[in-house]
Length: 159
Image (cartoon, rainbow, N blue to C red; front, side, top):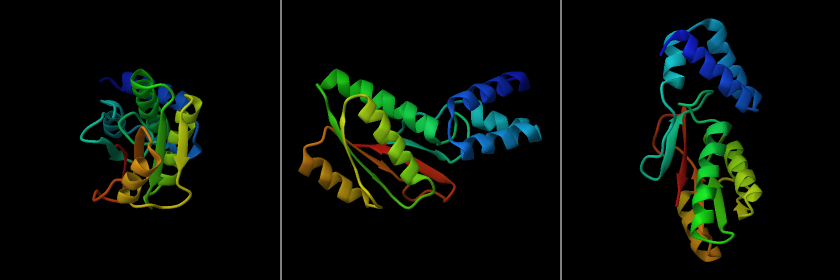
């Protein structure tokens, strides 16, 4: 991609991302003119792998941030709406950076789509999410965690 194309993608992302930390993170890269870093953030978008998304925390389409969590959650909501009427979700999160924020963003998107959402009020391990999904009869479960990955990562897993 050309520098101009990368800058255009960055500007597009900045219009879509409302959280100041992630906007500032990307604006610093733009101001610094680091084309390699821009390329890494925009040459692709995070995509679902085994169970969900995982990526470096930061601004851009190839990073995990509130916008990408919202986008993934809207896709999940669209899928659930095709499978069942209404739907429900349980959302848990761990102690990773921004896990609580990402969990709240996912809850907002699902609620806006008419789904009933249970959002844990504090840190929970993944097995507790699995138990809650079954116990509550929820359609889906989401846990915000990067498991064993380095600290600069976070993840979004769907059950």
